[in-house]
Amino acid sequence: MMTLLKSALKLAVVLVAVFAMSGVEAPHAGAEELAKNLFGNKKLPAALPPKSYGFYSKGCFAGGVAIPTDGPTWQAMRLSRNRRWGHPAMIALIEKLSRDAAEKDGWPGLLLGDISQPRGGPMLTGHASHQIGLDADIWFTPMPDRTLSASERENISAQSLVDEKTHRVIDRYWTPAHARLLKRAASYPEVERILVNPGIKKKLCETVKGDRSWLRKVRPFWGHDYHFHIRIGCQPGSTGCKEQAETTPGDGCDKSLAWWFTEEPWRPNQNPDAPKARDVMKMSNLPKECRIVLAAPSPESEMAATFRGPGDRGTSIAAVIQSAGSAVPEPAPQDVVSANAFLPAQGANVPLPEWRPQK
Image (cartoon, rainbow, N blue to C red; front, side, top):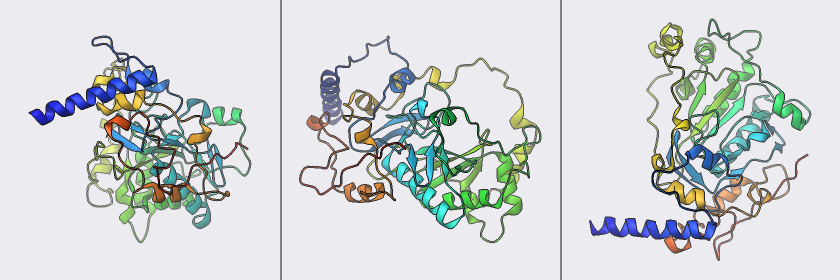
């Protein structure tokens, strides 16, 4: 009991210090603002060591980094949403997938949809998940051979691959390259799930030959007809991150898939006006660490929180993570406000992130 009391007291002291130094007032009991408004209005990440807290649909994360809007093999879309932030491991994976798919699978480059808000948390609109920096959406539309304008990134629509009436893939839009891209994404051990439309899962079940073990990671879900959703697991050091259940054995081409082609999953919602979780979720519903994440100071600018990727001069994000993994210590309670994920630990040889200007 004494240990619990001491822990609670220590947390309270830390929270008071964070709120005082950040200029943010602690919310009053009974007058909590919606968490989506608090997190949705944060323009920059929490300058703390990278950590995810809570579950994919109920949490937040610190130490986020932004993927550059343009890379050798990717372009970020819908820039006005400010959702190209993620845990450094997630950003590293996206860069690796874009590079490997271009070099080995004939995919010209990725068009990136939403990753996360700068500090995660519930979003103002859209996703239920993407809250802890470990989810990312990637369009099935390949990247064009030119740099898209800001207007195009906001207004171009991705091509749906699925007939909304039959829930099956439209064959004229499906190519073997789509299957190769999904297989490449599933090949990485850190990827735990890839969500696709049930019609796309069925197409893979019908056409994939040889090694089918990777199909276990590809799971059918509503939507996901014009993009696929990559989810990686909780990262080392994120002790407050809640793991998801393991996928079921087998390739998923069984009765569980057949269910998606019955009437049941597509029946009209009997209560369409019911509020979504993000519309009622408050800070008290999130892990207690999310208050610290929300109130923590930001890096000096977006430039300071955007990593260079492979292909440019400078250090790749993967090298930064590898070097920083054992060098950035857990901040002591008295240091939690001043800890900065974008600076090396004192005395440690950790390369600094560098900004890549937009083209």
